[in-house]
Amino acid sequence: MDLDKELPIPLYHQIKFYLEEKINSGQWEPGYQLPTEKELSLQFKVSNITIKRAIHDLVNKGLLYRQRGKGTFVSKKEDKDIYGLVTFRNESEDNANHPHKTLSFKKELAGPTLAKKMNLDQYDKVYTIHRLKIEGDLPIGIEYSHIPEALCPDLTETMIEDELLYNIFQNNYQLKFERAKIYFSTTLANDFESDLMQIDKGSQLFILERYTYTDERDVLEYSKFIVRQDKANYFIEVQL
Image 1 (cartoon, rainbow, N blue to C red):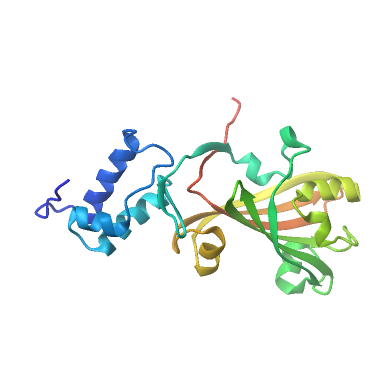
Image 2 (cartoon, rainbow, N blue to C red):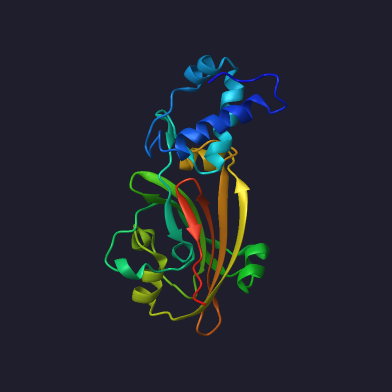
């Protein structure tokens, strides 16, 4: 493709349209590895920065994804019910493994900010858990969870290894749930998040904040999930 430098359309937009057409037409199928940025810059006779910008936009649209040390690939995006992100339980896989890598597990004072969120005293103790959610070999999200010690005494890191918190609460502590309240937002990946999830800094991320309440209306858990959005099309289906 020859770029038209006389057009008022920026060069990176022209490249982006060309790459997007390759994907949408099926010429580049899911899993296809793109030429390197250097090869593309030579092909289009533009700078690496122009190529990076075009690819970055397509990554943010979910059409491409990057793997550190391997390259850039056409995404295979699955439709996923957003309910699966915000609920504790995957009812079709009660006995399935739920891969997580525990990054930190500690017991600490709630402090004023967390105490306000969870209706606790700032001197109450909470478990603070930081985990990486994995699907296949791919890290797809970061989970920050806070749980009152009073509701789950003697919780250990071993208990949560590759396990849903729902199962721990139900099976180990016989807790019952009344409801969950979820807030949605987005952010751009910082250095820490990009390193953990093997994505570019500045990639679009999906944030869910969940407050889970027991049947006695105590806050059982406050969690924040930071999820990459290049691997799935999330939807909500409503019965009318």
